Image 1: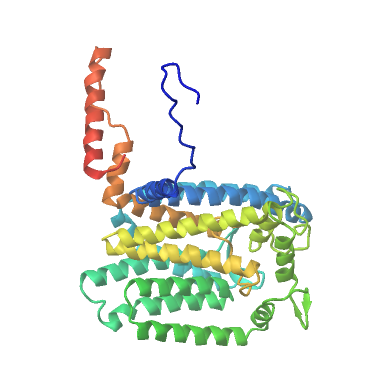
Image 2: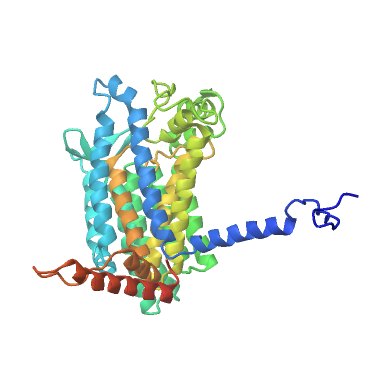
Length: 453
C-alpha cells in the first residue's frame, strides 16, 4: 500500500458528485424571486408604458416606410411620401405625449368637456356636403388643404374616455353609482350620439372601438351583470341589424376562414393575401423591404394590413415582438388602473387601455383571418396621423397616471439629482463636497424608507 511522505497512508478522496438537485432548485427559486422583486418595483408600469409605446411607434415608422413605397410610386409620388407624413405626425404626437405626461390630473379633467364638444362639432361638420370627404366609401374625413385630412371620429375616442372618466368619478364621489339611472345617464346616451354620428358616415370599425370603450367604463364603474348584459344585448342587436343591411359588411363576414381570393360569390382578395403574406414570412421573414405582397397584391398594406407586411418581412419573430409590446402596454395600463385610489385615474387609465388593446385585437384578428375586416388601423403602428395623434396623447395620459403613484413619485425623485442653492462667485471645490454629501444622504434615507434602489 503506498504511503505519503509523512509515513501515513493517504486519505482516499471522495468521488466528485454533480451538484445536488436541491441546489439547482434554490438557484432557480432565487432567480424567480429576484425577477419578481424587480417586476414589482414602483416604476415598472412607467417604464413599460414609455418603452413599449416608443418601440411600437419607431417600429411602426420603419414598417410604414417599407410598406408604403410601392403604393407611393404607383401614385406617381416619391417613395418616402407616406413615411414623411407619418414622421411629421409622430413628431407632433411626441409633443402631445410629453405635454399630456406633464399635465396634472385636474387639467386633464378640465379638458374633458371642451374636447367632447369639439369632437361632436367636427363630426357634425363631416356630414355637411362640401366639407366632409369620403374615403373608401366612408364619409368620416375633413380636408385641411392639400393632402392633409383629419378624421374627427378618432378624437371622439379620446373625448369619450376623458369625459366618461370625469363623469363617473364625480358621480362616485357623490355616491350615485349605486343607482342604475345615474350609471347609464348621461354616459350611454352621449356614447350613442357619438356612435350615431360615426355610423352615418359608415365607419363600423370605429363604432366598434367606441362601444368597447363604453363597456370598459361601465365595467370599471361596477355595473351589475344584468345591466351590463342588457346594454351588451342592445348593442349586439343593433350591430347585427347594421351588418345584415349592408352587403359590404356581410361580404366581410363571409370571408372568415377563406383560403381562396374568390370564395364563392364573395371577393376575399384582401383577407386571403394577408394570410399569404404571413405564411410566406417563415420564422425570421424575407428581410426588411423584401415583401412581395406589397407590390400591388395586398390592398392597404401600409394602413389596415401593415401587420401582414410585418409578418412577411420580419417573420414570426417580428409579429410576436409586436404582440409582446402590446401585451406589455396593456398589462401596464391595467396595473396603473388597479393600483390608484383616484377614481378619475382608474376610469381614464382603464378606458385608454381598453381602447388600445381592443383596437389592436380587432386589427390583428382581421389580418389573421379570425375576425371580419373592420378597417381600423393598428394603434401607434399603422399609417395615419388622425389615429396617431390622439393615441399618443392617450399614452401620455397613462404615463402621467403612472407618475402620480406615490411610490413612483418617490422613486423618480431618487433618480433625479437634486442640487443645493446656486454657488456664489467665489465657490471652490471644497464647497461642493457638503452639497454632494447632503444629496447622497437624502437619497439614501429615501431609499431606506421606500425600499427602492
